[in-house]
Image 1 (cartoon, rainbow, N blue to C red):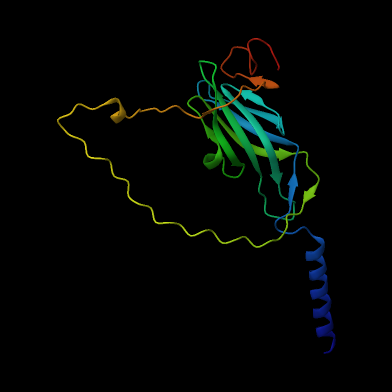
Image 2 (image 1 turned 180 degrees about the vertical axis):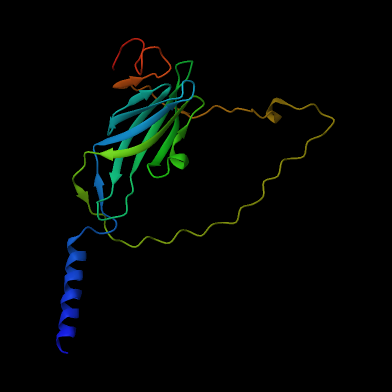
Amino acid sequence: MSRFPILAGLAASALTMTVAAGPAWADRIKNPTAVFAGLDKITGRIISFEVAIDETVQFGALQITPRVCWTRPPTEAPRTDSFVEVDEVTFNNEYRRIFTGWMFADSPGLHGVEHAIYDVWLTDCKGGTEIIVDPKEPEPPPPPEEPRKPRTAPPRDVNQPPSGRDRIDVEPPRGVPVQPQRPSQRFFPTNPVPGRDPAGSGG
């Protein structure tokens, strides 16, 4: 009968060693390459393309630049995310930042870029082998929220004609102006030549 406590103790020790040897829950893998999918709504074509970290690639009117791309070790629940900057090139050759934030491969519909013609979302991160161990520090409590005061419009004389300040634009300018970037690759699914800039320029 004394062997059962011994077996239970050995099993507990083995479990403790396994947990200590394996990566912690917050560990992640830093990858050098992000994989995206892009949809051209005019032709219905979907193109998959790879972008190196800090590299800029143009898909249609969008320029995509991933800044970091994370995956999880095989022993953890899969989660693939990337911090991405997306600029739109307008018809007037203006560059506007329309997206800055995290994209998650497991929920592309919530964290992708939806454009009038082009959609872009993250599908994978690849090439990483180094495991980054995050410090296990408790998160600080969120600051208390101040009560919001209701916003009221100032009274306006109904007998006076509306001024230009009373006009509300239906479609305000989209995005924040940014400096132009030179993409290393260009994909134009709408063009006759599949997936390439009609000028044939790769940079």
